Length: 455
Ligand code: PXG
Image 1 (cartoon, rainbow, N blue to C red):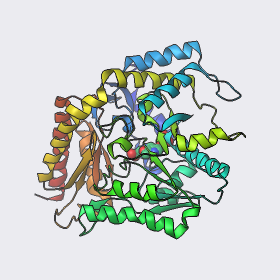
Image 2 (cartoon, protein in one colour):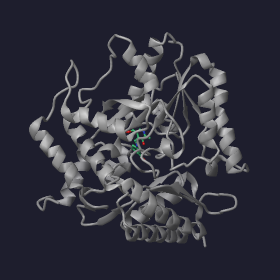
Image 3 (tube, rainbow, N blue to C red):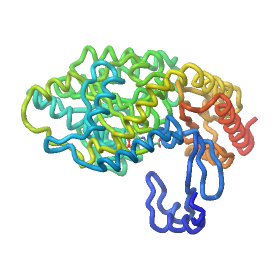
Image 4 (cartoon, rainbow, N blue to C red):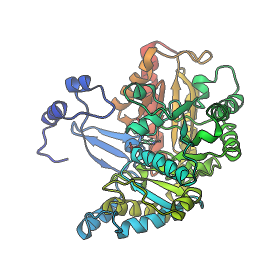
């Protein structure tokens, strides 16, 4: 940290001028927050001198942690050689070309093209633009309805917020009327007395019912995260994805997988669709593609769609000033190079993820833990007052908020979503660091249980 900085003064200026995302603005302007000043490996440091183990990889971004000098060097070198040029008007740049090629190599075989954006939200907007263009070129302009899921997160532009299924976001958005939502496969929250397997089939078949209700001729696409991340690391029952795959195979609709969180190793494979045996037509990525160092997102466009776009003339009237920004693409290239050469995804899946999942599953015996779920390098711990009835600790997720605050105070950065604690540590964490994470979380759970008098 710059030693000249006065933490109190900085916090005052932050409260005075900075409107924060997904924040109670009145509360923040009165009480402020934490100013993160530097980071190393899997630890962040704030201006009050706290060292915090980052159990959230930034915001599901820094899969390789914070000390990847090669990414910083690549960005710096690129800024010196060509800080910016656009990719419009028949121009391109070397990092964008090379990253496009590298992405084609690491993604499933059907992907041979990429459209770059700056974020996951813009990439999901791009999906809608691509899908419309595809069906227009096929002479099927009536295929316009999009199906998504409740409690999904697809970003925060108007289109992405409409695609997502978060109630509070819809309440604050003039949403798009051609987007429809079916239920999410969240067995612990909504499965009731059904077995997870029965529930998985039942909720998957809502897709079929929705297609029938809207008319297959009118439905363009189904969009989903392989595992809902922001919604609460919701790993669907084993029966869910095979049934969705059957429905997508039988029906003439496109499958869009939003891999913004699952992509680049989080689920134990390069992409979540590989973990679940799915073959999407379009795939959204962002976040870990640059290890979070520089904003970059995009859409991998499968051959089914790309072949149609490329076979017809006429401009695709969509683009962003910074689509394929040279510095972002240099960061992406350096990140992919590390991921490929270090085999970190494979090593994390083999050595670290099983330990992470096993340590968290030990918490199933804790008096306020109702369920532990997860795979690869992310997980959720559901908090309850009563395990049998799944009664919650307190209304409005207050138990999980308290537990999150306790964990943060104990030097562990974890998130709370609803009544669950959620974690997605960097893939470069060691076994010993996973143990520290588990111990700090256990301490927060103990303190939360004591607060609510649950034993
Ligand atoms: N899709 C998914 C699956 C995401 O998780 C986006 C799209 C949007 O990406 P951008 O780059 O536009 O933010 C995301 C982003 C949280 C949280 O609270 C998660 C995200 C963003 C903000 C907060 O977990 N994910």
